[in-house]
Length: 242
Image 1 (cartoon, rainbow, N blue to C red):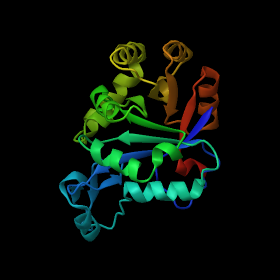
Image 2: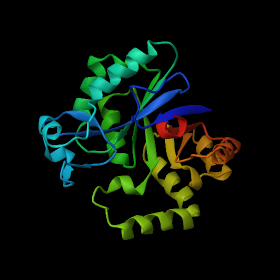
Image 3: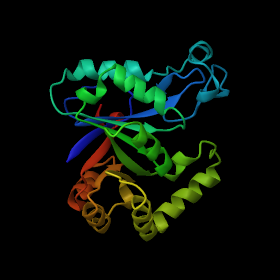
Image 4: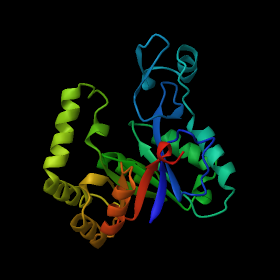
């Protein structure tokens, strides 16, 4: 079973030898600088919210204490740590539209296609996966079951609770939803929250030659359950292994 480092926090200090790959969340600033960030919003020194895509990278550095690591710098750090010592997966979780040109250009300039054993483009939107597939046939495509990733403005707790309620109570619908979406595009990977995974879902996706990566598991008990279900990989947050 593959172990994927989920998130970039601690990238400079964590050892990559215990992992088979890393997932990076990508967004882009107003001046087309691709950066690593899960959330669209960051805060300035006064606690005011800033939208990453509405500010230039230099402006963000000037008005906030939060450090946004550029995508190219992150790739260089990963390559230096690995030194081509073993097959390693790079998964890019696309959090924003219309940045495929800059992402592809960075990968080309740093020779990422020859360095990494596989580069996965992940998104909850089939349309986004299609865009990157048209950009390069070297990408593997990962469909993510993450409703909250579709909406940057869902900050009200009511909506978050509603989505979580639907996820946990309508589990059979998840099975049909993944099946319907995968029929639209050649998907190689399905990224699914660990509590929504069961053996029946794994068996169906494997019949479609789709690998299953689980995310969100934190305890040994949760990991063991995923192993027994037959997942192909688990995404593990850096905080869980410090």
